[in-house]
Image 1 (cartoon, protein in one colour):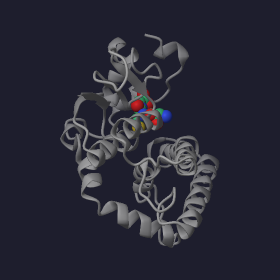
Image 2: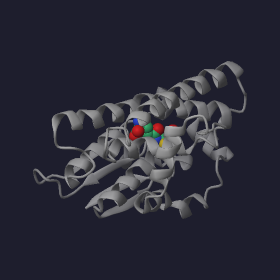
Image 3: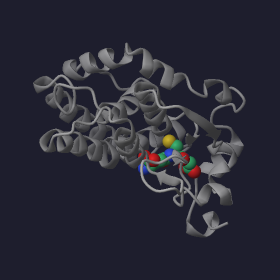
Image 4: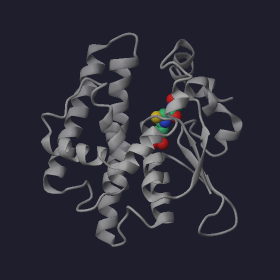
Amino acid sequence: MIELHYWPTPNGWKITIMLEECGLPYTLVPVRIGRGDQFKPEFLKISPNNRMPAMTDDAPAEGTQPVAVFESGAILLYLAEKSGQFMPTDLAGRYAVMQWLMWQMSALGPMAGQDGHFKIYAQEKIPYAVSRFENEVDRLYGVMDRRLGEAEYLAGDNYSIADMACFPWIMTHKAQGLTLDVFPNLKRWYATLRARPALQRGLAVGKEWKASITGMDEEARKVLFGQNAANTAR
Ligand SMILES: N[C@@H](CCC(=O)N[C@@H](CS)C(=O)NCC(=O)O)C(=O)O
């Protein structure tokens, strides 16, 4: 069984979306990132970067030992391999997925994350940082829009883990004060994915946990911001 260490945030949703899409059974372990669960020694054993999501599989396809995986992109690849779904088997198709997945992990996710940080969470609003990340996210939306003007999905004709990785980071556009109206192909893709029942189930996972922690409260701010090597080596 897959055990997913999870909190309902964009990087977490990528995995619940995939699990719901591919139908693999799973259980959840909540990682209350605003309360510091990401620093617990038992979590660090499977996720040395202090970040969720992370997963274990006690019934892997090979060997008898459980397999642990951290980094959402790696988890998506693992689940695609285990389920045999949402990843083409031919070489060109596989690398079409892989390149857009790497693009999400290295560009869209981190840049949209920083954009959200400086616009929404930072108490001091720094104009240079706000415009730097907003411009970069705008550029990345443009890249995606051009790609989705030539293909239905990011990797071509078929919905894949690359689309699942990107979706939650496009979903944040309204909160970040961005619009999809100027990106018609991206808007079409977004609406198509939004209508998928499995994706909606994935987004609903753990919704009720969030209600117990009121957004970015003082305690969460202390835990999440200002981390460095010294204060995270517990
Ligand atoms: N590259 C990582 C990023 C994971 C990540 O940043 N997770 C956030 C939540 S979306 C987290 O665990 N934050 C806890 C913290 O900042 O201490 C991945 O894609 O898995």
